[in-house]
Length: 213
Image 1 (spheres, one colour):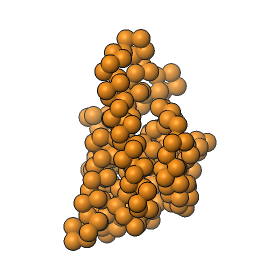
Image 2 (cartoon, rainbow, N blue to C red):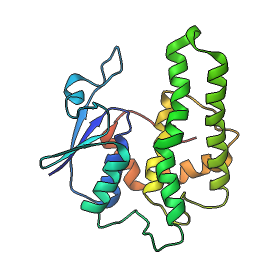
Image 3 (cartoon, rainbow, N blue to C red):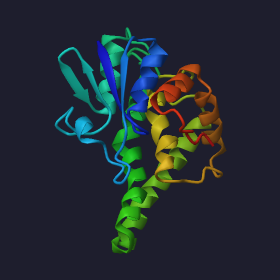
C-alpha cells in the first residue's frame, strides 16, 4: 500500500495533499522533529539514503524528492489527473512552474534561513545577491498570478500543489511580508480554501496554521 512518511511541518505535506486531491488510498505515518535541533528523527532519516522529507513507500519501492513523488503518484495511482499533457497549450507553463518550485524558488527561500543560522558570519554582499533572486522570484510569481488563476493557466494542477509550500509553510521558517503582492495573497486564499488542502493539513500537521496571507 502507498505510505506517506510525513515529517511534521515539512515539504511532505504536499504529498498528503496530493493523495487527498486524487482520493488515492494511502497510509499516513507522522514523524515529529527533534524538539531541540528541529531536524528529522533518526527513524525518518533511515528511510532513504538522503534522509530528507518527503519520502514514500509503495510495496518495495522507497522514493524521495517532492517532484519525483508527485509525478509517480499521478502516473501510478492518479490516472494522470492534475498533470497537463504535452498536447495542450498549457504544457510549457505547467512544466516551468512545476520545476521552478524546487529548482529555483525553494533555494532562494533557503538563503534567508541559512543567513539566520550563520548570523554575523554571513557575507553581506553574497547574501544581498542571493536575496535579490528571491525578490525576482516573488515578482515573477506576482506577475504570473496577475494574468491567470493558477500557475499552468485556468485550472488547478500539480504545479500549484508543488508551488504552494514555499509560498506558505516555508514562511513559518523564513517570514516574508506579502503585503506588496496582492495577487499572491488572493491566490493563497483561493487555493488554501480547497477542501483537500484543508483535510491534508489537518491530518499532516494538526495544530499548525499555515500562513495564507
